[in-house]
Length: 113
View (tube, rainbow, N blue to C red):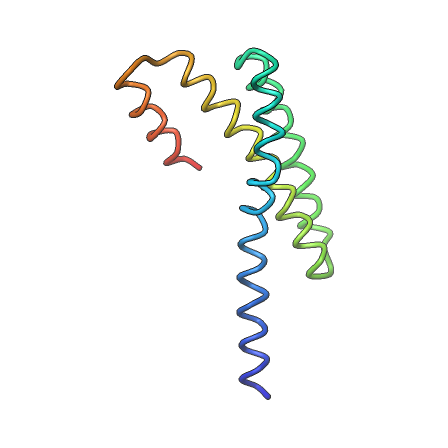
């Protein structure tokens, strides 16, 4: 019985950590559409504002969460916010760096994610 509880806790912890990435992958196409329809500078500015609001919301949700579902929702908010910055930032790098430098710049930017 104790072994089952440990297994359940491990599965729930895995779901918790994966939820940010799942939300990031879900919201990235929407952020990509926004980036494609606007300039990368405007979309990056909007995404940074969204990130600030999204992370503020996630922080408040984490602080107020009393259930696992609340924690999952907060973690998902982090993923949605990071998707916005990822698309805007990579678009800006693609526009401002040429050729070989672009790959290095994107690689350097990815190390901070």
